[in-house]
Amino acid sequence: MGQSFARLGSRVTIAGRAPRLLPKEEPEASAVLERAFAREGLDVRAGATVTRLRREGGEIVATLHRDGAECEVRGAALLVAAGRRIDVASLGLDAAGVAVGPDGVVVDEHARTANPAIFACGDVIGQLRFTHAAGYQAATAVRNALLPFQTALDYRALPWATFTSPRSAASARPRRRRGDSTTTSPSPASPTATTTAPWPRARRARTAS
Ligand SMILES: Cc1cc2nc3c(=O)[nH]c(=O)nc-3n(C[C@H](O)[C@H](O)[C@H](O)COP(=O)(O)OP(=O)(O)OC[C@H]3O[C@@H](n4cnc5c(N)ncnc54)[C@H](O)[C@@H]3O)c2cc1C
Image (tube, rainbow, N blue to C red; front, top):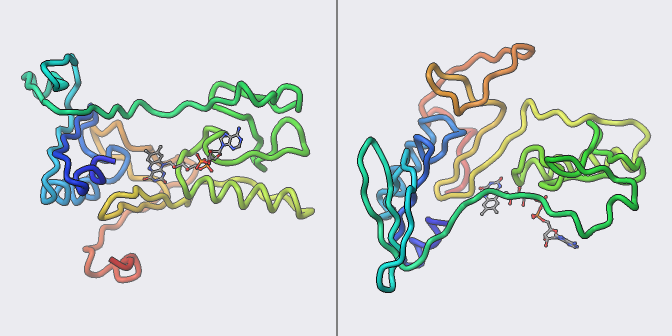
């Protein structure tokens, strides 16, 4: 969103508590995007906590705490990324025998809800809230609804992308790094080996543009 507004001509500051722009991705991917944002004039303040907001004249003033110091950012508008929460209260799912838990509509590994005739997929099941996850869950649900054999959801090699420019894409789980609590740790049941290759050598990973 920040990059879109910057490209439409707004002066944009992105402030977040995470130590880098894409905390769930490899640090190298985050660094590529941070450099691209800097080139486009976005001001990224990673590791910053917003401690105060006030209006001053026609402006919104945010006080940021970062690296033990305070600073202020001023702007005409404030966009808050506060996360997403599912809202199915008005759908009457109780009446259909579909169970809802704290994370969303409850499904089994076949994407089937508590009512065996109803399947659910996407953000509403509260698992991985990515476009590619929704598509994968939908394909699994449709297969399981229509075909006699059942396929279980398996997220071990699921790709995902962050739709920035350049896009960041990843597959499987990021490796765990010492002192980095933000990445997902590989499952002991499925150990992974990691290799790093320079981008010019990764021809098959390149996309158009
Ligand atoms: C700001 C933002 C940035 C994001 N960036 C990324 C990203 O970079 N990469 C990524 O992979 N994912 C990203 N996501 C997440 C991604 O958009 C979702 O994971 C994905 O859209 C989920 O698909 P879905 O079909 O489950 O839900 P949605 O795409 O939300 O579709 C649900 C549809 O159901 C409709 N609907 C809702 N209630 C009813 C009703 N009662 N009756 C009929 N229709 C209804 C809605 O109008 C909507 O069209 C982002 C999300 C947001 C909000």
